[in-house]
Image (cartoon, rainbow, N blue to C red; front, side, top):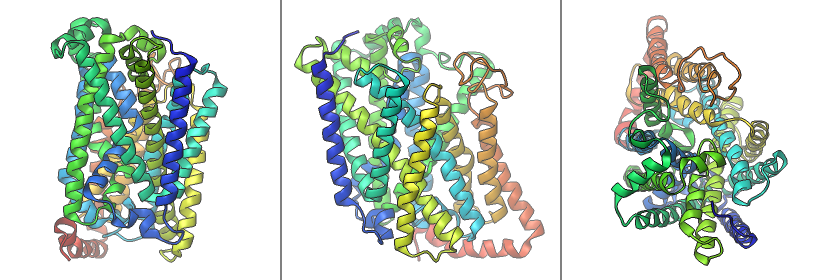
Length: 538
């Protein structure tokens, strides 16, 4: 592999400093007033459909999508291709099924949507718990990865102390972005990130194709050879295996991704900042187009990494392949001393850094908003909190969530924390997706059904993942030397998703039989809100 000089590392540091300075300045300028809740949570609904669509795409494409998916494509070929397509399909599903009803029903958080027809503290608390359960694992993964990636990018010895400093640095910046910028400030960061990410990825993809005379067939043949898997590179099975149970696990993972990724709270929260239904429709069109384009570029870059870098070098640097895009940029840059190599590597590294920052900032904002709005303002104060007080709570909640994520990421930095990404997506598919679809489209959904869906779906995903093969029993597990893998799969979605839907249905049927008066009240509230939920009619 090409080794870069200290001049290249200096260029990367200068670029990092410039990006952080500019984005912090924009957050300060776009930040809300201390007593302006509408500005903090929705940015005054001031974003155009194009800007809001780019912000949605920016929140949707996390560092895990950029790095992990590219690495899976490079190491597992066909399995990575399917994962990239499933990632795009998840946003398409959100666009056609949930986007418009969510915009009509929501105000600031997921709790507003769920409590619209079922007001009460229990629903708000459950919404907050599930939001934290879905966002905290993602935050830990992103911050833990930030430590390893920054030491790799800056060519710092990979000691625990260096990674801890990098994790703390990125975590502190994410707290500042979320606390100061609010919805509008973080949206600006997401727009900058997605434009830079698309531009840089397009350049890398063009260079890959140009290296093989614009022949996709040649790229695939070289990737088969570089991966060491031969024809198996273009067949299902390199990621999870080829037995019947492993194929079923693979199908379950893709279903989980399709149902869960777009339903995560920090994604749906962006929909509430659209002015109206036509605006959210156009915003989602821009977001889907952007994400689909990027997923295509990921496939090209991952395949190029397999072809030009080779799986042996990729896994030597990181067993999960998360540095494959950086290693690819080194190879494409040519001579390490050339200006082109320095510029290309610095650009890719800078985009990776800003992607890490923007991803964790959006998740922190979603968690802090739920704590302040759902838990404090409505559950603790019964909706009587002053705007200035709620804003202060949201700011301090950002600090608390960020600090907790930093501590957990520091403790888990030597673990294979990729399982936490699967856990977060499983919670989105098993708890959030059933709760949203039932509450928006089923008249008979009751409070008991809602609580059973949220707690049952999230709890089943958590329990099954703890006892899955992703945590113990396999060489790639979090605890490879332990053996308590009672659930014989890597992902819990194939069981936890049906369980979440079934729990909501059974809980609602129980209410209809034992609490007829409450069920009639829930039905009345749903019928009153149905025209607005489904057709934006007052």
